[in-house]
Image 1 (cartoon, rainbow, N blue to C red):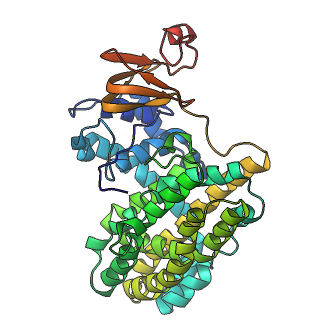
Image 2: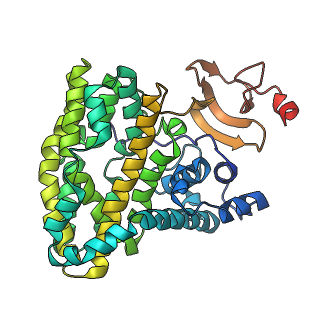
Image 3: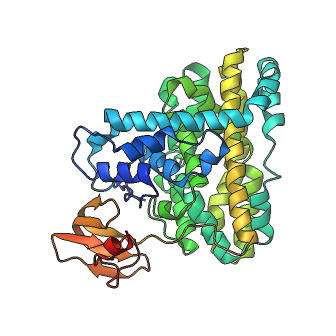
Length: 411
């Protein structure tokens, strides 16, 4: 993959909060005043585990965090640190942190004394080796080709920017901790070879499996919990006070990676997929058997250094991240057990070419400016000839994909 600045397309909103964020980002940066219904939605956020399944809140948070990653096509970069968007991001992110912490608080309290005394041994014993992964075991033995493709789409939200959220910790760490973290991340980014970046290898595995490997192409179709998995990483990575959580999360990923990736590689071969598909997973079997030792013994252990507060941080990242991964696995396996897709229905489509600017109209269409083409949800490409085109969002137009005003009747 080249060094071209590849940005995400703004996803389709899933409610009042994500709708307000999307409608704001297509404008030029200016003073923002949220509508009362958006403020009401923020005030009414679930304070329990259901929050990680809140489609509207998790998508809104993902969009606000993506501004700190690659940003969006047609969106002004000045929005990244806009005070009002930063406020919304803080509200949504803090709630995610609180909900995850509440789910693992008892385990954290139980394990802090042992982490202070023997951080490395305690960590390995606590997170395990990943061999019990219900998702990986199912995929190895029974996943169909279509389920395999869904798995890659679900994982792509993180894997196509693999390592990036954890790398935010590098300037905040120091000494042996920074050296260990940098050693791991250098390998994540290909050890100097762009072709061996883990994100690049995953994109190749997607393409060889017949899955669109465009950056963030599947965000519109992944359920909220997948976004929550990614949001937790970014919420921790962006904040200095959660440095330990970022280190713990990375160490958990490394410690529980090798065996599941071996199962995924076996599944790819069982399904008769090209060898470059298994290459990504084989790479992790080898690399993460090294990374887990560095992450736990050379990074987390010296970070804790006998400090109970730091031990608690590391445990939050490790146990909280594992809990979210389990939540995602439960959603995916439940869908497959019922012989249905784990993905959400396909969105109306997305613009292509030119310099697109999208305006999401509340209870109305998406106005598209500056794009050359519109790619429909069915993959059909439509040439855009008008300066402004209205794309149907309600699904009721008789002139799909264009808006014909039917939403007014439906409303």
